Length: 102
Image (tube, rainbow, N blue to C red; front, side):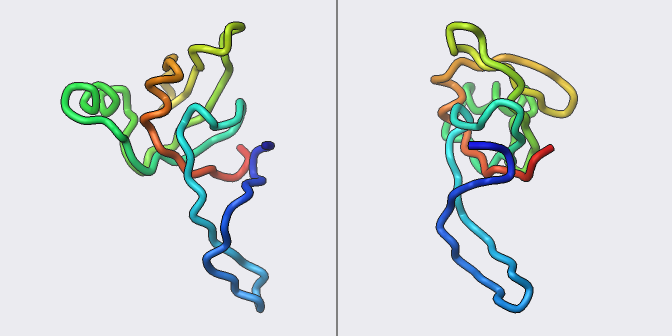
């Protein structure tokens, strides 16, 4: 799915302005390479959740998927100018909403 084109259920349509809003969220492991998303929730608790927050992975924070390793795991992400890699099983615990193309 290219950046800026998210298939989602429409929950609001303003016919006059041709505007819409959607509620599509998905886990971080499904964010396409080169696309940016906004963190909505972290499905972890305790020390694991604290580790994510220490990395800058907090709700409302913007995150960009940079590239995947040749084996498809881990994936590099950028948050607040820092680049780090997350394994798929960790990325699946972070819920994001797609942003427009950056």
